Image 1 (tube, rainbow, N blue to C red):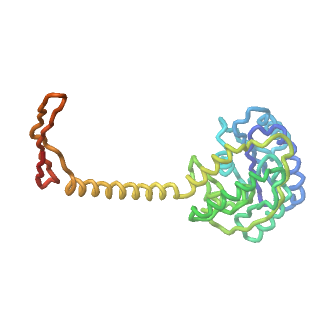
Image 2 (image 1 turned 180 degrees about the vertical axis):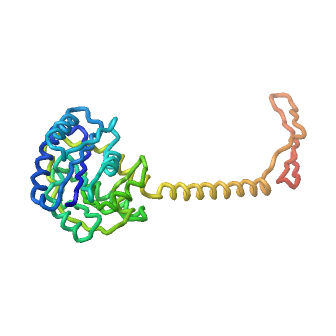
Amino acid sequence: MKLLTISVPAYNEETMIVPLYERIVEVMNEVKETYTFELLFINDGSKDGTLDQMKALHKKDNRVVFVDLSRNYGKEIAMAAGFDYAKGDALVTMDADLQHPPEVILEMLKLWELGYEDVYAKRNRREGETWLKKATSKMYYRILQKVARIPVLPDAGDFRLLDRRCIEALKQMRETNRYTKGLYSWIGFKKIEVTFDAAPRYDGQSKWNYQSLINLALEGITSYTTFPLRLSTYSGFIVSAAAFIYMIYLFIKTLLFWGRYEWLSFTHDYYPIFRWRTTYQYRYHWGIFGTDFSGS
């Protein structure tokens, strides 16, 4: 019998732990003759009763296990902890808010049995999301596709089934600033998609505000692509070339056109009835070759 690990990072999801557990148990009971499972919760430094709910479920059902992180590291690190502690032949990673329907796991398992090693879930519709969030998401993926050498699958998030070979490959990547969506593409392996409709949150509010999403987007561009490094390199070449051209310009200007006045004398002659005459003599040095012009 094959073991399936279901990894669920959670931060302040006290009201979601039990409903999620019940849905997963209901789904996995349909394939209990073929698969056994472990439900691996990752408590990402929650400040509410999330950890207590995990402990209570663990006492009730030994298939429920949990990892308690020392602080809130963020979802990317929490998922990496799930990769490290998963014992299954395959792993499903999903969110705790039930926007990822557990029923999709059954379809993932069928495709895994056909030989696919990365079965990723792609959203058809985004219930409860504003048009602005949808538009900015599409724009971000369009930009990321252009600057990344290995394309990232748009609208394919972290809800997916990974074969043990994929898990071992991801465990070798120990970055602290992770962009896991990019790492899924980077490791390769045989991929296929399943589609689902993302439901509204079962309870509570999303922990992802616009600032968090912007930070994640910047993390994706800076950690997954070499675009910032290439941009800095090109900018450095342009600035250096412009500075060199300007230096040549100043040198030629000084060589050919630089000049200065040398005053030889300056006198005032005063006459009656408030009249005066000024007389001066000068020599003008043109260029550095010493050509002189005089006048008075």
